[in-house]
Image 1 (cartoon, rainbow, N blue to C red):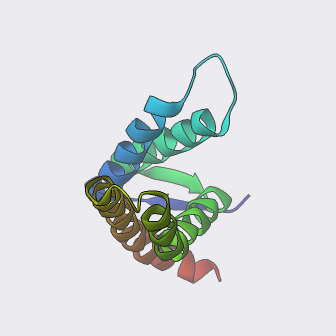
Image 2 (cartoon, rainbow, N blue to C red):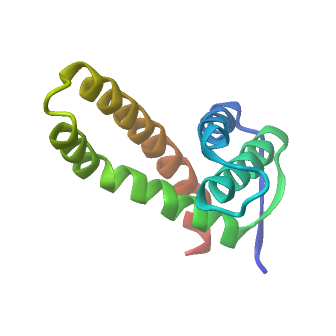
Length: 121
């Protein structure tokens, strides 16, 4: 496996830590559900960008694709939220704000990881 040495990046680490904490609220430690898997992956990513060091290119590529998908799906997710909460605009706007914030964070990660992955392409 090809590896890349990354330097610590507190901004990226905070994004992944935040996502890990969000998924921790949904996960059940005794089950291997999607919430637990996302919590684990984002926690590993947060630690990785906190400490830096050698990381498998495949892991970075998977994070890149995940963040890219978050970014691409944000608009569709917002439309679904508007429809689902059409009678509760305040709640819809709160969820949309959270989706948009995650999309902004994902865009930042995509730009950063894109630069790390570029030499390998």
